[in-house]
Image (cartoon, rainbow, N blue to C red; front, side, top):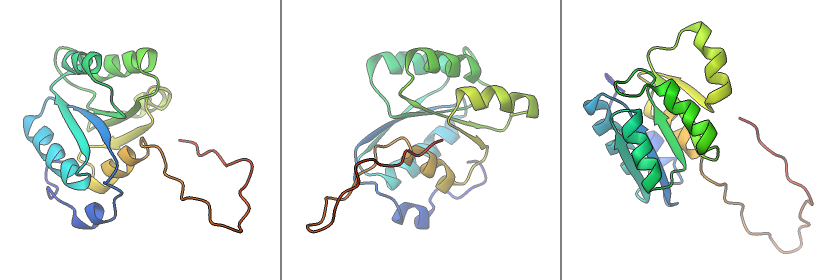
Length: 159
């Protein structure tokens, strides 16, 4: 998010930010953590945004709270993002995993494709991060309208 505006009003206005959600942001750059917290809290007033400075701190957060999604950098001290991703897959498979990193080489894309739901190049536009996070939230289907038949099976979206 470095070099990007802290707020993207078109992205924020287009959101369904009235739903509760919990997101964990893991990055060793304090300025990026502050900016992402500001943007996400503005985007979803009922969203809880927790920040961690490395993978080990993120694991501590995960043992104390549940999260809908984790946004993480790959290169961090103490525990790197790849180790954290593998732990998330093994122990928290229901949590959406979003990589936000400037250090993704072509060989790594295959590995990340198996571990992460989304891979965003840093710095990503706020709208891209918000879209990825919104995909972690359960969809709200509108109530059925009278006189209309409801389908028996719904399509399943894929990642």
